[in-house]
Length: 165
Image (cartoon, rainbow, N blue to C red; front, top):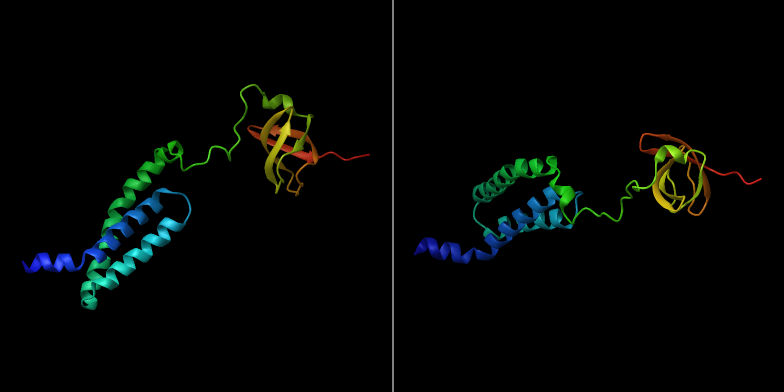
């Protein structure tokens, strides 16, 4: 009976800690350090503080949470290494521009196009009606500037601004 009342009185703290651990694990899988990770850490700390008890008990709870996260880490890393992150809706496909199927990159040398985004030095340009990932020779090129393809190195398309004259 006493154990059940102890658990029942600490339900909010336990929920905070469980949700905190889950959010930190989600953060391990998602790229970057954002809202799930910060919220998870805050909930873990809040859950540990709300349980009260002695400093030793709070350190034991923190240790348990740390062990759970260390157990989850290899599984998250293995999932990332196998490329499962690329198959999730978390990765934004609209941001990356793949090589169009109908365009042979080697044939682009000498062609002109217009920058679709700023090149700092990398960005997107429209060449022969196709959006392509391009890079300048290290210089900043604003959006809407006419550029010429200087060379193609594998999948790297190097452009420079067309001089008006």
